[in-house]
Image 1: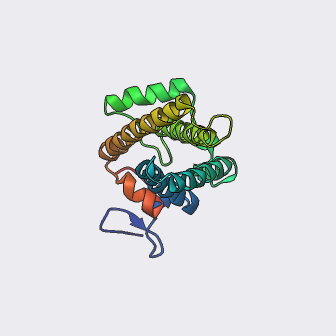
Image 2: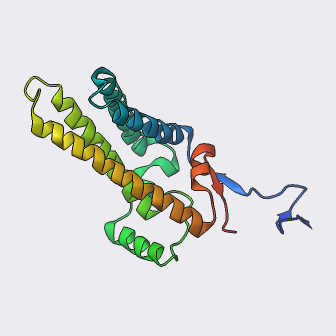
Image 3: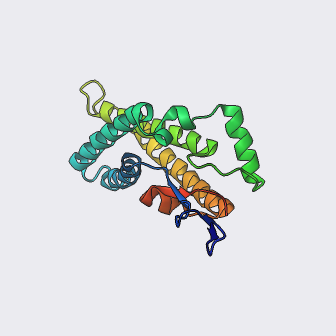
Length: 190
């Protein structure tokens, strides 16, 4: 055995891996597609109604696919792997505010809660958007107002999500944005 530059031990000339595959291609494509499509839906709004409606349907299909993937997908993509009880999530948030939250290879409890919240917000925004196009609710201002409020609330949730990603990246000294592109995270804490 010999020691490598980083202090890791090489056995038989092989170094132990320093990263682990966490986010499968579907999760990564879903994540960045949802970002782009939400932005497109927001920009098109009332000015480009036909495009807005098409984007809304694509977002709805994407969310439906992610929900299915949450039950049949890879280990870290499954809801059963990352969704935690509320008391565990609150304890994690308390620790995070104290800058003492433990590192998670997959989603941490706060990120898991945010994922569920963003899926629900996006889905209800799509549902209200669809309702606006039905004969029964065509032109119903209250549905349009709910749709708009949900879109702006989603933006608020996204802002909290981005803050959480930046905080966790700082706290654990890792680039979580990069990991959502590469699918890999550091194996051990440095």
